[in-house]
Image 1: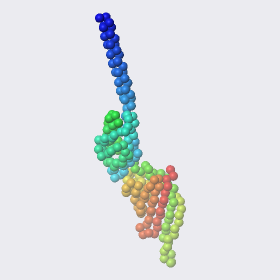
Image 2: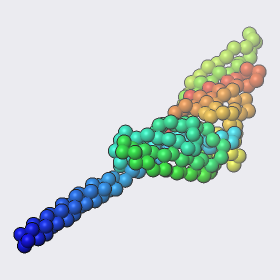
Image 3: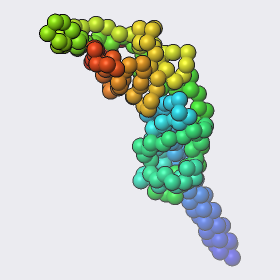
Image 4: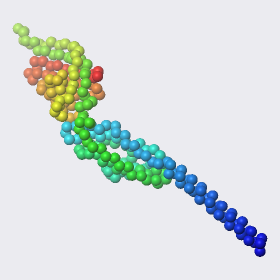
Length: 221
């Protein structure tokens, strides 16, 4: 009888000891999963406000933590898919909401909100500055034989500044050019003022064709 009691006590100790070891192992595994939190960063590539009540917004998502591959389910806007890059035209404040799921089906919802601020994201910021220009000039000359054109090429500088009018810019603080569409402005006797990657082209021509000034400018600062 005494031998049976000792055997039962030993068996009970063994069972309890085994349960404690198994519980500890599970707790350690769960802790490891919890430490690997998923995080999603919104990278804004461009946010530009134009005077035609539209904003150009380019962005992408960068995910870390958890374990890839990741699945993206967009709630706002629901038309998006994946992590980008994306390009959108918006007229109001921007709201983005997306569910991100990793390979272990761990899902988290990420929410982003951007307030549209025309002054902070002014489309004219990338145009302002001083430009070194090659100036091609054509002048009509009238004499006893009729008329002909004189041509010359020189260099000059032009400074572009913001006008108090959100739709306009100033050339050397005197000539105003007006927004037509992104990278394209118009002005008095200006047949196209076009920007392209820190450069611009402008043609200033008299309606009667008596003169024309063509500028090819490169931003220097």
